[in-house]
Length: 158
Image 1 (tube, rainbow, N blue to C red):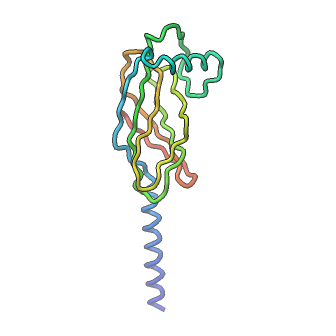
Image 2: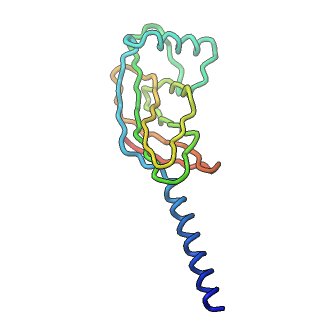
Image 3: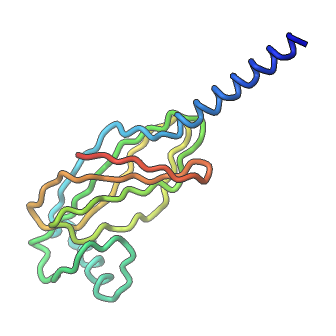
C-alpha cells in the first residue's frame, strides 16, 4: 500500500510539473522591437486608400483622433516590428499588437490576417500607425494573444 501511495504522489508531482511548464510556456517572450518610419509621400497608394476608407466610413482599424487629410507630406507610417518567441508546447493564437498612441498618432492600420505563433518557434509580427511626420518612434505596445482559449497580454515600452 505504501508503494502505491508513493507512485500516486510521484504521478501527481509529474503532472503538476508538466502543467506548470505548459503555463510558463504560455508566456510570450519579446526578443526585440524595431521601428521604421516611412513618409506618406513614399507610400502614396496606401495613404490614398487609407484616407478614402476613413472618408467613406469603411475603415476598421483603430482610430485615435480626427485629422484633416489634405496633403500627404505632413504624415508618415510608423511600422513597429516585434520579434516574438514561443518556448511552450502550445501555439499562441489570435496575436494582436496594440500600439498605445502618441499625441501625434492618428490611426492604427488593421491587420490583414490573424497571426499565430506555433509552439517552440519565433517570428516577427508588425503593426503600422499613421502619424505626423517627424514624430517620435518610441511607443508602448500591448500584445494580446490566446492560448487554449485563455487571453494573455504582455506590455513592452520601446
